[in-house]
Image 1 (cartoon, rainbow, N blue to C red):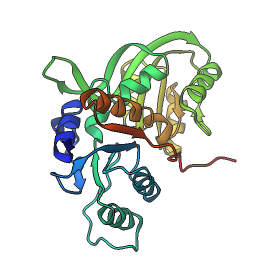
Image 2: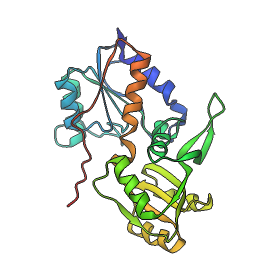
Image 3: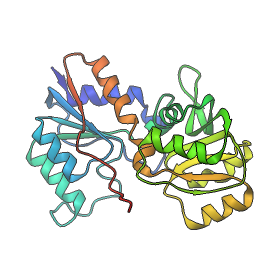
Image 4: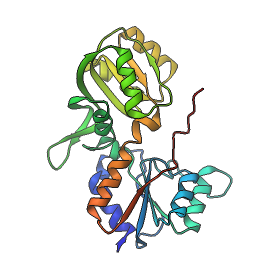
Length: 263
Protein backbone atom coordinates (compact mmCIF):
# COMPACT_ATOMS: atom_id res chain seq x y z
CA UNK A 1 0.00 0.00 0.00
CA UNK A 2 1.21 3.49 -0.86
CA UNK A 3 2.07 6.11 1.72
CA UNK A 4 1.45 9.86 1.62
CA UNK A 5 5.17 10.41 1.12
CA UNK A 6 5.33 8.07 -1.89
CA UNK A 7 2.38 9.78 -3.53
CA UNK A 8 3.80 13.23 -2.80
CA UNK A 9 7.11 12.23 -4.40
CA UNK A 10 5.32 10.97 -7.50
CA UNK A 11 3.29 14.18 -7.80
CA UNK A 12 6.49 16.23 -7.52
CA UNK A 13 7.86 14.21 -10.42
CA UNK A 14 4.79 15.21 -12.42
CA UNK A 15 5.28 18.88 -11.46
CA UNK A 16 8.80 19.37 -10.02
CA UNK A 17 9.26 21.52 -6.94
CA UNK A 18 11.88 23.59 -8.76
CA UNK A 19 9.23 24.88 -11.16
CA UNK A 20 7.19 26.62 -8.48
CA UNK A 21 7.26 30.37 -8.00
CA UNK A 22 9.48 31.55 -5.13
CA UNK A 23 6.53 32.78 -3.05
CA UNK A 24 4.48 29.62 -3.45
CA UNK A 25 3.68 26.78 -1.03
CA UNK A 26 3.45 23.26 -2.47
CA UNK A 27 3.73 19.63 -1.40
CA UNK A 28 2.52 18.05 1.84
CA UNK A 29 0.89 20.80 3.94
CA UNK A 30 -1.12 18.68 6.36
CA UNK A 31 -0.81 15.14 7.64
CA UNK A 32 1.70 12.37 8.29
CA UNK A 33 4.22 11.31 5.63
CA UNK A 34 4.03 7.65 6.60
CA UNK A 35 0.24 7.41 6.54
CA UNK A 36 -1.04 4.58 4.34
CA UNK A 37 -3.37 5.63 1.52
CA UNK A 38 -6.04 3.50 -0.14
CA UNK A 39 -8.21 6.25 -1.58
CA UNK A 40 -7.48 9.78 -2.84
CA UNK A 41 -9.82 12.66 -3.62
CA UNK A 42 -8.65 15.18 -6.23
CA UNK A 43 -10.10 18.71 -6.39
CA UNK A 44 -9.09 22.21 -7.40
CA UNK A 45 -9.46 23.69 -3.91
CA UNK A 46 -9.04 22.41 -0.32
CA UNK A 47 -12.18 24.16 0.92
CA UNK A 48 -14.10 22.91 3.97
CA UNK A 49 -16.79 21.32 1.80
CA UNK A 50 -14.12 19.45 -0.17
CA UNK A 51 -12.52 18.21 3.05
CA UNK A 52 -15.94 16.97 4.14
CA UNK A 53 -16.36 15.19 0.79
CA UNK A 54 -12.96 13.53 1.27
CA UNK A 55 -14.12 12.18 4.62
CA UNK A 56 -17.48 11.10 3.19
CA UNK A 57 -15.84 8.99 0.45
CA UNK A 58 -13.30 7.52 2.86
CA UNK A 59 -10.20 9.18 1.41
CA UNK A 60 -6.96 9.28 3.37
CA UNK A 61 -5.45 11.94 1.09
CA UNK A 62 -6.74 15.13 -0.53
CA UNK A 63 -4.79 16.29 -3.60
CA UNK A 64 -5.49 19.81 -4.84
CA UNK A 65 -4.09 22.47 -7.14
CA UNK A 66 -4.48 25.35 -4.70
CA UNK A 67 -2.62 25.20 -1.37
CA UNK A 68 -4.44 24.76 1.92
CA UNK A 69 -1.94 27.10 3.61
CA UNK A 70 -0.98 29.96 1.30
CA UNK A 71 0.18 32.63 3.74
CA UNK A 72 1.88 31.90 7.08
CA UNK A 73 -0.78 30.87 9.59
CA UNK A 74 -0.69 32.68 12.95
CA UNK A 75 -3.24 30.31 14.43
CA UNK A 76 -5.29 27.21 13.59
CA UNK A 77 -8.79 27.63 14.99
CA UNK A 78 -12.39 27.25 13.88
CA UNK A 79 -12.68 31.03 13.50
CA UNK A 80 -11.66 31.13 9.85
CA UNK A 81 -12.17 28.85 6.80
CA UNK A 82 -8.54 27.71 6.57
CA UNK A 83 -8.44 26.82 10.25
CA UNK A 84 -11.72 24.92 10.01
CA UNK A 85 -10.50 22.94 6.99
CA UNK A 86 -7.19 22.12 8.70
CA UNK A 87 -8.90 21.02 11.90
CA UNK A 88 -11.36 18.87 9.99
CA UNK A 89 -8.63 17.13 7.97
CA UNK A 90 -6.48 16.52 11.05
CA UNK A 91 -9.40 15.25 13.12
CA UNK A 92 -10.38 12.82 10.34
CA UNK A 93 -6.84 11.64 9.62
CA UNK A 94 -6.76 13.06 6.09
CA UNK A 95 -3.51 14.42 4.63
CA UNK A 96 -3.36 17.25 2.08
CA UNK A 97 -0.90 17.64 -0.81
CA UNK A 98 -0.99 20.32 -3.49
CA UNK A 99 0.71 21.23 -6.74
CA UNK A 100 0.28 24.94 -7.46
CA UNK A 101 2.49 27.14 -9.65
CA UNK A 102 4.70 24.15 -10.46
CA UNK A 103 1.62 22.57 -12.06
CA UNK A 104 0.91 25.86 -13.85
CA UNK A 105 4.40 25.90 -15.38
CA UNK A 106 5.15 22.25 -16.15
CA UNK A 107 4.61 20.91 -19.68
CA UNK A 108 1.27 19.12 -19.72
CA UNK A 109 0.02 21.05 -16.70
CA UNK A 110 -2.69 23.67 -16.14
CA UNK A 111 -1.88 25.89 -19.09
CA UNK A 112 -1.31 23.17 -21.67
CA UNK A 113 -4.61 21.58 -20.62
CA UNK A 114 -6.33 24.96 -21.00
CA UNK A 115 -4.78 25.56 -24.43
CA UNK A 116 -5.85 22.09 -25.56
CA UNK A 117 -9.39 22.59 -24.26
CA UNK A 118 -9.68 25.73 -26.41
CA UNK A 119 -8.41 23.93 -29.50
CA UNK A 120 -5.11 25.79 -29.84
CA UNK A 121 -2.15 24.30 -31.74
CA UNK A 122 1.53 25.08 -32.25
CA UNK A 123 1.71 25.78 -28.52
CA UNK A 124 4.47 27.94 -27.01
CA UNK A 125 5.22 29.14 -23.47
CA UNK A 126 4.00 32.66 -22.72
CA UNK A 127 6.58 33.43 -20.01
CA UNK A 128 9.48 30.95 -20.29
CA UNK A 129 11.35 30.12 -17.07
CA UNK A 130 13.70 27.34 -18.21
CA UNK A 131 13.88 23.82 -19.64
CA UNK A 132 13.14 20.55 -17.90
CA UNK A 133 15.28 17.39 -17.88
CA UNK A 134 13.81 16.42 -21.27
CA UNK A 135 14.70 19.76 -22.82
CA UNK A 136 11.11 21.02 -22.86
CA UNK A 137 10.49 24.69 -22.20
CA UNK A 138 8.37 25.45 -19.14
CA UNK A 139 6.91 28.57 -17.53
CA UNK A 140 3.63 30.35 -16.89
CA UNK A 141 1.00 30.75 -19.60
CA UNK A 142 0.80 29.44 -23.14
CA UNK A 143 0.04 30.80 -26.59
CA UNK A 144 -1.07 29.11 -29.76
CA UNK A 145 -2.93 29.52 -33.01
CA UNK A 146 -6.44 28.66 -34.11
CA UNK A 147 -8.46 28.82 -37.29
CA UNK A 148 -9.50 32.45 -37.77
CA UNK A 149 -12.87 33.27 -36.26
CA UNK A 150 -14.84 36.20 -34.91
CA UNK A 151 -14.61 37.15 -31.27
CA UNK A 152 -18.28 36.20 -30.58
CA UNK A 153 -17.66 32.74 -32.05
CA UNK A 154 -14.53 32.30 -29.94
CA UNK A 155 -16.35 33.46 -26.81
CA UNK A 156 -18.92 30.71 -27.39
CA UNK A 157 -16.08 28.19 -27.73
CA UNK A 158 -14.55 29.31 -24.43
CA UNK A 159 -17.90 29.18 -22.64
CA UNK A 160 -18.76 25.71 -23.93
CA UNK A 161 -15.29 24.20 -23.51
CA UNK A 162 -14.80 25.42 -19.94
CA UNK A 163 -18.39 25.43 -18.70
CA UNK A 164 -18.22 29.09 -17.71
CA UNK A 165 -21.15 30.51 -15.78
CA UNK A 166 -20.35 33.89 -17.33
CA UNK A 167 -17.59 35.64 -19.24
CA UNK A 168 -16.25 39.19 -18.94
CA UNK A 169 -14.44 40.50 -21.99
CA UNK A 170 -13.12 43.50 -23.86
CA UNK A 171 -13.38 43.69 -27.63
CA UNK A 172 -10.04 44.72 -29.11
CA UNK A 173 -11.57 44.87 -32.57
CA UNK A 174 -9.53 42.00 -34.02
CA UNK A 175 -10.25 38.61 -35.51
CA UNK A 176 -9.16 35.70 -33.33
CA UNK A 177 -6.11 33.91 -34.76
CA UNK A 178 -3.27 33.90 -32.21
CA UNK A 179 -4.38 33.28 -28.63
CA UNK A 180 -2.58 33.49 -25.27
CA UNK A 181 -3.93 31.68 -22.22
CA UNK A 182 -3.15 31.92 -18.52
CA UNK A 183 -5.03 29.66 -16.13
CA UNK A 184 -6.10 31.58 -13.03
CA UNK A 185 -4.89 35.12 -12.36
CA UNK A 186 -2.44 36.04 -15.12
CA UNK A 187 -3.39 39.62 -15.92
CA UNK A 188 0.25 40.71 -15.56
CA UNK A 189 1.02 38.98 -18.86
CA UNK A 190 -1.28 41.21 -20.94
CA UNK A 191 1.59 43.08 -22.60
CA UNK A 192 3.59 39.87 -22.96
CA UNK A 193 0.74 38.47 -25.03
CA UNK A 194 0.76 41.59 -27.19
CA UNK A 195 4.54 41.40 -27.65
CA UNK A 196 4.13 37.84 -28.95
CA UNK A 197 1.68 39.08 -31.55
CA UNK A 198 -1.43 37.66 -29.88
CA UNK A 199 -4.79 39.19 -30.73
CA UNK A 200 -6.63 37.45 -27.87
CA UNK A 201 -5.82 36.60 -24.24
CA UNK A 202 -7.87 34.22 -22.07
CA UNK A 203 -7.25 34.35 -18.31
CA UNK A 204 -9.09 35.26 -15.07
CA UNK A 205 -9.39 37.64 -12.12
CA UNK A 206 -8.83 40.73 -14.26
CA UNK A 207 -9.15 44.32 -13.07
CA UNK A 208 -11.25 47.07 -14.64
CA UNK A 209 -8.21 48.86 -16.02
CA UNK A 210 -7.00 45.66 -17.67
CA UNK A 211 -10.08 45.68 -19.88
CA UNK A 212 -9.65 49.38 -20.71
CA UNK A 213 -5.97 48.90 -21.57
CA UNK A 214 -6.69 45.85 -23.71
CA UNK A 215 -9.39 47.64 -25.69
CA UNK A 216 -7.13 50.63 -26.33
CA UNK A 217 -4.19 48.40 -27.28
CA UNK A 218 -6.23 46.27 -29.68
CA UNK A 219 -6.28 43.04 -27.67
CA UNK A 220 -9.35 40.88 -27.17
CA UNK A 221 -9.28 40.20 -23.43
CA UNK A 222 -11.37 37.39 -21.94
CA UNK A 223 -11.91 36.70 -18.24
CA UNK A 224 -13.29 33.16 -18.20
CA UNK A 225 -13.04 32.73 -14.43
CA UNK A 226 -10.44 31.25 -12.09
CA UNK A 227 -12.22 27.94 -11.52
CA UNK A 228 -13.13 27.22 -15.17
CA UNK A 229 -9.63 27.97 -16.48
CA UNK A 230 -7.91 25.70 -13.95
CA UNK A 231 -10.33 22.94 -12.97
CA UNK A 232 -9.71 20.81 -16.11
CA UNK A 233 -6.24 19.92 -14.75
CA UNK A 234 -7.83 17.86 -11.95
CA UNK A 235 -8.51 15.08 -14.46
CA UNK A 236 -4.83 15.11 -15.43
CA UNK A 237 -3.71 14.71 -11.80
CA UNK A 238 -6.20 11.90 -11.28
CA UNK A 239 -5.15 10.04 -14.43
CA UNK A 240 -1.49 10.37 -13.44
CA UNK A 241 -2.12 8.86 -10.02
CA UNK A 242 -4.19 6.00 -11.47
CA UNK A 243 -1.43 5.14 -13.93
CA UNK A 244 1.33 5.41 -11.34
CA UNK A 245 -0.49 3.54 -8.57
CA UNK A 246 -2.89 1.00 -10.13
CA UNK A 247 -4.04 -0.27 -6.72
CA UNK A 248 -4.93 3.24 -5.55
CA UNK A 249 -8.55 4.36 -5.83
CA UNK A 250 -8.55 7.90 -7.19
CA UNK A 251 -11.72 10.00 -7.21
CA UNK A 252 -12.31 13.48 -8.62
CA UNK A 253 -14.58 15.71 -6.55
CA UNK A 254 -18.20 15.50 -7.62
CA UNK A 255 -19.43 18.33 -5.40
CA UNK A 256 -16.84 21.10 -5.85
CA UNK A 257 -18.04 23.80 -8.22
CA UNK A 258 -17.17 27.39 -9.04
CA UNK A 259 -18.02 29.56 -6.04
CA UNK A 260 -18.78 32.52 -8.33
CA UNK A 261 -22.41 32.80 -9.41
CA UNK A 262 -24.01 34.87 -12.16
CA UNK A 263 -27.54 36.23 -12.55
